[in-house]
Each structure stands twice: as C-alpha cells, then as structure tokens.
Image (spheres, helix red, strand yellow):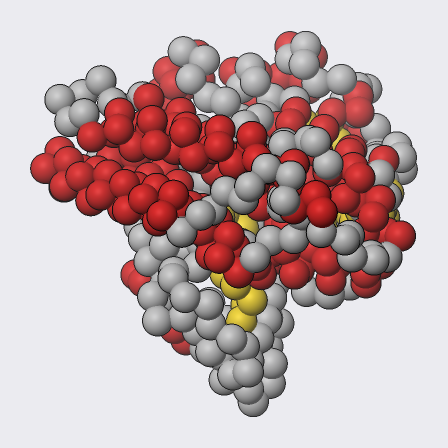
Length: 482
C-alpha cells in the first residue's frame, strides 16, 4: 500500500503545483480540481498505515487517480507550451473537473477507505527477507518521488546495466524528482539500502552503472509497477494490454515476434526502445506523429531510424530528454529549435575519440535552446553558419541566458567553433574536448585562453583527448561518467 500511496502523492503533488500556476486565470475549474486532488491525497496518506494488502478495487482506484493527475499535468504543460488555445484549455479543464468529481464520488460510494483497525486484524503474509527489508524501509515514508524512481527501473530489460547519469536525467525530465540533487539522493538511498547495486564504478569511485539487487527485488518492483500501470512493457504478442493509455512504453522486440502495441500512444511520456536489429522493430513504434506529450525519448540502442523518423522527433515540443544512437545522424537540423523544453541532448557513442567517426554538425539553434543543460556527443559548429550567427549566440551567452552545464564534448580542428564561445558559457561545469590532428595553432591558442579565463573548469572537470591534449596545463586524462 505504501508504494501506491506515495506514487500517487508524487504525481498529484506535481499536478497541484502546476494547477496553482494557472488557477488565477478566468477559468476557475482548476481550483476545484486542485482541491479534489489535495483532499484525495490527504485521505490516502491518512489511512495508508491501516491498509495491508491492496485489493483489486483499491488498485483500480489508484490507477484512475494516477491517470487523472497525469492528465492534469499534460493539460497544463501543453497550455504553457502554447500547444492549445485558451478555449481548448478551458474545455479540457472542464472535462478534467468532471472526471475528478466522478473519481472522488466512486471512491466514497464504493468504500475506498476501510474501517480503521480492521486491516490490522488480517494476518501478515510471509515475505522473503529482501522484500521485508524493502517494506521496512518504505513503511512510514510517503516519499513519492523515491518510490516512482524505484519503479522506473522496470523500464530496462532484465540484467541490464543502467547508466546512472542518464537515469537521473530521465527522472528529472519526467518530473519524478524536482531537481538533480533529489535524483542523486534517491539513488544514494537505493544503494545504501541494498535495493540497487553498483555494477560498474568510475576511477573516482562513483557508481557508473547499476541494477536491482537480485531477481527477488526486481520481481517485486515489477509487480508493483504492473499493478500501478506505471510502465508498459512490449516484447511480443503474448504481452497483456492493460486498460487505459500507457504513460511509459518500453519496447524490447524479439526476432520474428510481432509487438502487441496499445491502440493509442497519445499519452506516452517516455518511450525507450531496446533494439539493435533494424528488422525486428514494428514501424508503428517509430511513427512519432502518434505521440503527443513525449518528455523522454531514448533511442540509444535503436538502429532503425530514417531521416523521416528524425525529422518527426522535432515536433515533440514537450521533449526534455532526447538520446539517439551515435552515428545515426551527422547533423542536428535547425528544427531542433522547436524543442525549447529540451534539457538533455545525448548523441554520444563509444567510437574512438581520435577518429572523425560520430562527429555531428550543429547549428546555432542548439546553443540557443533556453533549457539545455547537457550536450553529449562529438559536436562541431557549422562552418557556413559561424560568422553569420555568431553575434546572435554571443548576445545570448553574454546575457547569461544559457544554462548549459555539460559539454561533452566538442571537436577542435581547423575550423572556428566552440572554443571561440567557451569562455562565455558561464554555467559550464563539465567539458570534454577532442583535439584533431589538423587543429590550427590559432584555434589552440583561443582554446588555451578560454581555459585560463574560465574559473569553473577545475582539472577534474576538463578533459582533453587526442594528439593535442597537452595544450592546457590544467587538463589531465581521466574517466568521466556520462
């Protein structure tokens, strides 16, 4: 029960905050929905300790409540992104108000809340030691983002080694945590309680990859995720489709086995595709016009992407996290400027840093994205655009509008590029630079000056790779978590 209560509370909390930001507008139905959500959340938390097993009825209500909270959040986000008109917004809010009233009425009519103390007489079922430890950790802690983050591990295939940095960025992009420090704290809790274990560490001792500790823990998390309809796993025709629209879709295609996709993908917030063979993936998965509110798109292991697929991605205006397999594209088009909510753009790979392979050309629209924090891959600036738009980008950077924290990384060669703008990126905390053999002395000099001028680039935060890595006395080789 603690799982369900806290999981809903986190989603409802986000929805309430967003409702509070708009309920002062002429449309006041948002105020009524906000009150309903707060009342339901408080009632659930108040009675959580009196309920042991979750009945089918209560599980159904939790699923309905989670869906309602997500619908409210999607409505607000679409309105703020100017994807809906004032009239459409008012209509949607009115329908959500009716849905909220109907759900509240059903909860009270069918007796969602048990008689206090009745459940305490029920004998506790025997559980494995690992699960008892997990339940003890959760008991009395209605920390919703903590629990939702734990359920998120079901997104990945069994025995998958999850990269910690991208994982925490996904949590933030989806709103499962409010800020990066909360994501770090949650992962630390999982490690300390042995719910999640490290499978790889970097040279500085930080956890680089992780996974649930043992099959028992994973199966328990999976069961909770399924009962809450938190993540829909599609891996073949035998998969059972739950009622309602899924919010998170994890696709694990099998050779010669058709996927049993849901009828509607319009409410999917996270899509992760784990496919290395181009012929194994259903084309409908990559028909991005079917998705309306995507926040997280992970295609790092998907090789089946055409130019048409890539182009359609740039219409996802609520996108916050975008990851594409290295080598799939050689340039990021100007249309990416539509993604003004984007926080992470990950086009990184494992190709040799001294090779030209995997280098992606970007235009000014990338650097002008107002919320971009992490730019990962091997990037170079467009030669054609540099002198034309440099003044626009300089004004943007000098006004301290850029929030870019991670630039991993950019390529320095014979052309002008990031090195001319590096000292103006005042929020930078981590930088990686690939120096090509044709790097001009002029560009190396500009780079050295930018490094000396930038006080935020401590040695462990700046990495130079390639034949010219000795350019700066401040740089040293080290591993870097991506």
